[in-house]
Length: 419
Image (cartoon, rainbow, N blue to C red; front, side, top):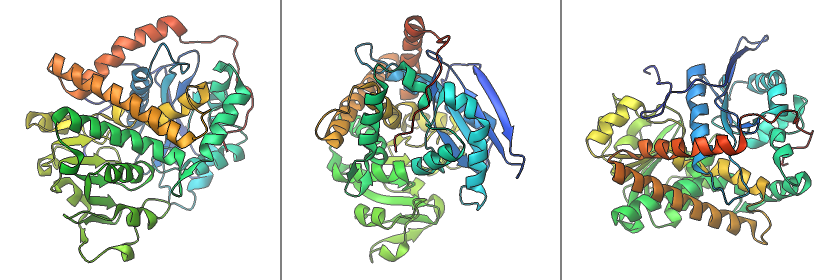
């Protein structure tokens, strides 16, 4: 694998506010925390665990979180965007020692989580696992740093707990909102191009939390899912896969039991999803999946980055030159993060039907944001990524002027996580 860039193309240069490397005294595994920016003394960004995770990777992800937060800034809303951050651990989550490594990492990061860094699940981890390890590490909440910024802490805790208790067709609302946002991004791009959902085919890499939910929402919107990929390889069917059957046959890591495949379903090589005969590709698993050495296999018209940083910078330049539009991660997969804060700050979370309210709010927000990004790209003659970064760059100074970097004297109160 080539050395990854520290930031995607068109990303403005930035020196992180704080960057640190931790070494586990038991296994020698390394972990990282990068705080790209603070707003009112607080930052937001998930924690990932994967073999080969690097400080450079985490820094790029933290910068992306700053962009995601800024892009959802609405001066009329209760939700005030936070700064961007990210955590990472260089460890295989399937390793028997992984959980204890996670607990020790969280113990080491306890001062930051207690006062300034709100975190949650990312690649390789589930929210349930993060919550359990957070408690074992002696912390009472993975998002406790944000509570002093809220008008009513008790009400915020209740809203988030209620939202996380909701399931839709057996899948938690928290696992579905991000996929809803990705799907809405794709649908907005199709609308802008005058293509009906029923005319579009899609291939999805990864059937974990984000990829699985995205596949479900796109299939229910009328797109034909012709290929999905997991750690075992690609499953394809040009006539369309039974998405619900595949989702029901997943394990905790998003790997599909091949026993549920139908006669028309084919098992192909790992990267076969790239060359699927589809209009849309959705990389929803690992970073750096689309590289200069494999991008030529792609015939799709759009790539929607459901994963963080799945398209390398050099690959994106080659794709753009031959007419492939990359819908960037800082926009496409931002709904999960925003949903947490919409709920905590009180923009949503009090309706009788929490799932309907969450999906309605997500669809409306993502339609508006993606539409604005595509319009800016057309006006500037740029890519959607460059347009998204330009929009964020416009908003960051206002956020800083209104709210500042620090909140002197504010300390987090020990509060339980959403479970």
